[in-house]
Image (tube, rainbow, N blue to C red; front, side):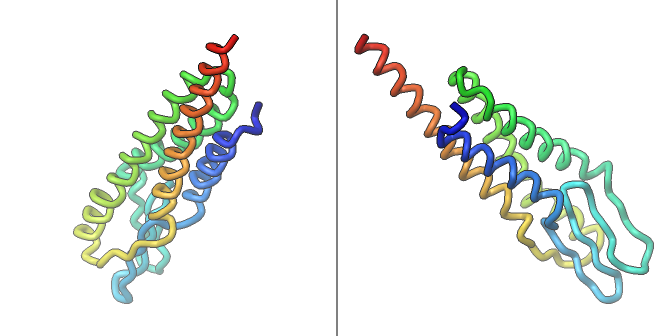
Length: 156
């Protein structure tokens, strides 16, 4: 029963996590110091100045995005095990909350202080919030589906 609504929500989460690899989360633009963009894969430099690639510092961000993506894809196919599906969605919600907190509170301030350039939030910054909304919707749908199955078991 892959055609359930929670499968659609989880697919949207997987697509959103994939988009994080293509859209920057934060821009740091200064004509004198260069342009830097924070992606899920790390900080990239778009100037003639020496590039600052903070791969090791942004590795937790990459791991969290990949974990959220893989967990959303695995959870789609666990439609027969609603309890496990519900638990994995809740863990994925926790991962996305940590991802949002990590980017909003930590990375934007660290790189802003290090580069001495003000940060500008981009579309990629709001993608984890979108996936968080769809994860909550998937969790509610799984819970509703589970209660429907339990109520039909009582009738037999």
